[in-house]
Image 1: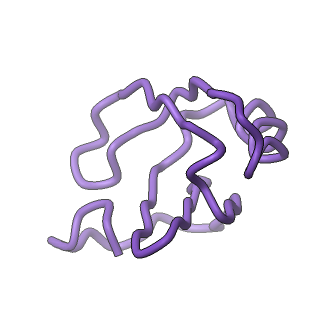
Image 2 (image 1 turned 180 degrees about the horizontal axis):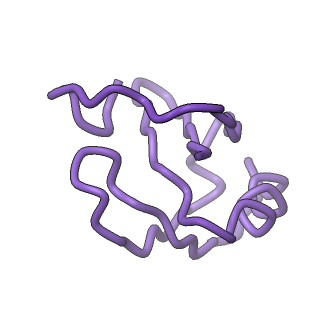
Length: 81
């Protein structure tokens, strides 16, 4: 399981990456700070519902993909840290 962490000025988001799309997400995060838009398939970590995430990379200060070896325990904090 992998997560996409997005950081901006005053905000942070965490999204679970849909299985099989990790390489696409990794290639997209190279666009951080550029005047481009990305479309990523993600899962809401609170509900596991599929979602299409549209990212304005110019508004993102930093992004990282975190790989985990085991299932993360569920919490009520949702996708925002």
